[in-house]
Image 1 (cartoon, rainbow, N blue to C red):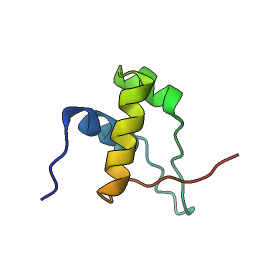
Image 2: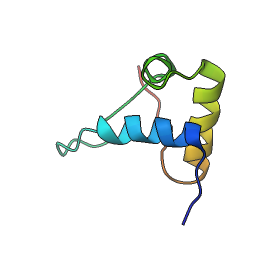
Image 3: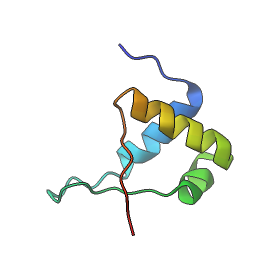
Image 4: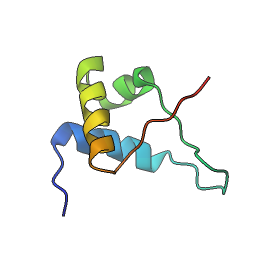
Length: 65
């Protein structure tokens, strides 16, 4: 089992709760600002949590326009 920090848990819960599973590929894009607002974390901690989740395979970065 992968251990996650409290900050990672907050971010992962937001990502999981708002994930769109309608069948379209790669949905559920989030920028850091909304994650900051919903989690109550500052940008640095949101970024670190997202990077850590991506390294653990629990989230991934995608390019958006």
